[in-house]
Amino acid sequence: MLQIRAHHLFCTALFEGCGYDESFSREMERILQCLQMKPEMRIRLCCGEADPLCLHCPNHTPDGGCRLGTENVRMRDQILLQAFSLHPGRYRYAELRARLKTGTKADFEAVCGGCRWKEAGFCSFSKLQKALQ
Image 1: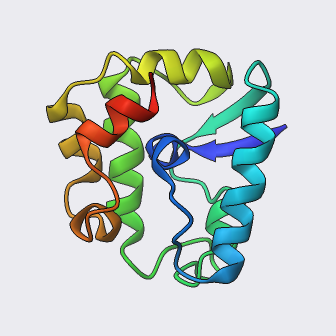
Image 2: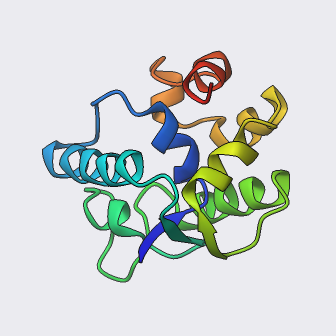
């Protein structure tokens, strides 16, 4: 079963091929291809745990943390879970995407505010809305 960190749900809708490095981008493409081919697939939504994408990130530390701030990343997971009334556990990916459609700009900003990809212009609430249509 595929495991995905809560805050990575927005990333699955917004990824445009740019990543921290080639390994990260390849893993994101692999995950997206799997989710697009099988939207009814059950995934394990997690909070504060490294997922397969984290393992391919150059900021991942051997102890499972993040050089960008382990607590910051964990907080993003928790904010997303709370905003969409979710809990760590098993969900169908299509169900999670449907829930994301109910999000507000404030939800997006709370989860993604300060993210380097948002700051670089790759992600925005309007792009998220279009991607989830």
